[in-house]
Picture 1 (tube, rainbow, N blue to C red):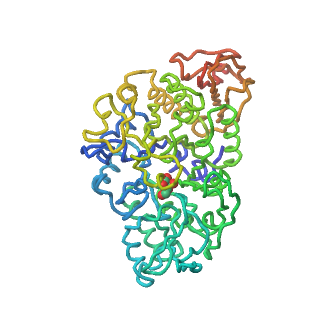
Picture 2: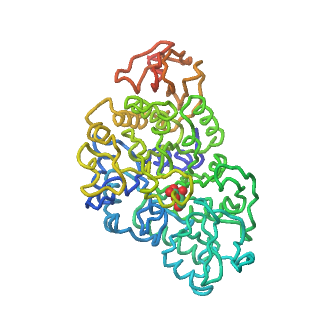
Picture 3: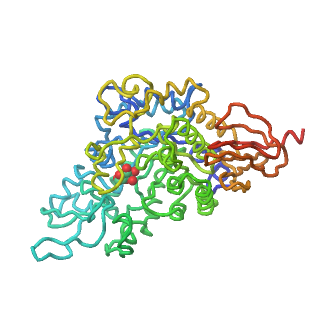
Length: 561
Ligand code: GLC
């Protein structure tokens, strides 16, 4: 399929753009590897483990890392509350460490994607510290200040409109010094910036250029579709009093997805596009797959949440893939099963299956990985999923995720942010100190060292899948078509490019059975099974065991020869 602006359209110097056929690995830096014993992961810890990711014979084989924020932050929202976008928080290291990380990544052909939070800052950011002082001064207009809509009977100011914070309550906070409210789509300590202020815009663009000058290869844009709001800030329509969250009780007509956002993104993309080899991925904030696809541009991916929100049944995945293919036709989607904001997919799928045992966890992790690494799009792996990591349980009273705690009734995101299990030793080889979150309880048996030593591990399956994908044009860039193999419990799809045809079949349930393979110009050959290391040639039917994922190739050459 020809992606507008991709390899063929963009010219020979971008013959195989990494954003199109590479695999990205998300690192949550607090939890990846701690080098200095303070219990929190850091940049040196990440540098120490780069060979694990790429560049060596035993490496996983990813093409890029996206690092969740490493900037100076009071960490009320895990670093997504930034007080200086141009420095590294001391808990992670120094700018010199970041320079070394970029250099070490590039030596291994790993691209570095930084997380850019440009919808809001921390309230400790010097811009906001000054902005809240008075209505005049160089930073007065950097944030979204509004007068009260009125005063209640007790003389208290009333918010300018009905907008809500995603984390709960009104999106407006009163500042007595200015006698005005400021807007915060997230925590009150995360004021939204004013993108209509030319000076703010100039500061942001200069910061973006600064990171590009330092050698980063791209950015993940946090909640980018909330950057611009309707200038007059009218109230949002109330749509449902019994929605599952307060946020969903409103139609967010005025606080995100503003039509002028496309112009703002074009300015940003202009800066990035001036640097060859760079790319970005935008995090869509509470909108649907059509909206995600509508923001896409060559070199600029956009996350949608369809797969991440799909339950572990063949029917749900079939519907999700059909919806994605329809929305992303002629464009290039991302593939995401887990991230730092949601429960890990192995935990979710085990819950659906009503199982907790280790063998089922491994089987479902391998089956899910097979889908993730063979669908059409750019896969984003979340650290630890390659060893089948599950959520940890952190009591609300001990939660480190202050933002989630603020959001009454919401899941505590600490669950999916556990320290990486490197070994079966003390603190799973993550830290020599006291880890900032509990080590996963199964870390003595589920860890990188143990899985490296076994060809049958989840990690070995990920490595095989990544190698298979790398060597297959059909899997990297081919078209996708769903196939009906006559068994409602089996998902099947074809990937095709030129003479190459690859068939993926996955059984979601716990009862096995045979399926009919679709007709092909040559015999089907198994190139990978999540249950077996052997890869036999098969006839027109194949047995698919419980939770088994099989990748087959059509051997067209065998006929020709
Ligand atoms: C994004 C981040 C999330 C954060 C939110 C507000 O959704 O992924 O972790 O809480 O933005 O900054």
